[in-house]
Length: 253
Ligand SMILES: O=C(CO)COP(=O)(O)O
Image (tube, rainbow, N blue to C red; front, side, top):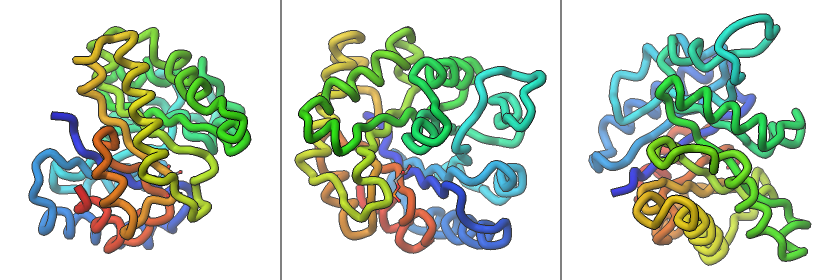
């Protein structure tokens, strides 16, 4: 059975102290309240907090996540953070290809593919983000565009490696806007993406891959979204900054 995943992407929010409180609250609630062994909670926190926060997580129900990485293992890349560095402080999941990085830092599909390779080589889990703009949806090219993102950054992988990837569909028009994709829109795209994976790797492989939805997920809409047959969880921004709401989301499977 595919893993159900509730991942919080804190983005560039919270001071160290605030983050420590938030993370501890989430960890304690998850330990007490989440009983489904198939649910994985992931907390993707800012780089400077990873080392300390990793030590505060004392349950396998919660995985420490990073929001980015650089594909080279080490060397003269001032300001960058490598996958082995993240691994050495306990990181299990790494978000890559987030639309904010594609938009503000010009990250290409090819660069994201390099990151996928580096993460898989280290044995960690990439959370690969994809998603279209509102213009692309209005033009009716959204399915082809997002399928292309998968093709360009993932389709060089072996089936065994692909199975280790978590995909997050995040329509850009739904991120931080309060506008969520409807259940039908989410399900429709997730099915298109799973079929696309199946066309290359076969249905059996495609069935094993968790595809998360991201974009204004909150405590009120999570249950309906997660009930869609091809939606295996959420990548949550704003609502992951509130412990009670985020844990409620993680309990919505
Ligand atoms: O970008 C997101 C998660 O990566 C979604 O952000 P919001 O949940 O704030 O819309």
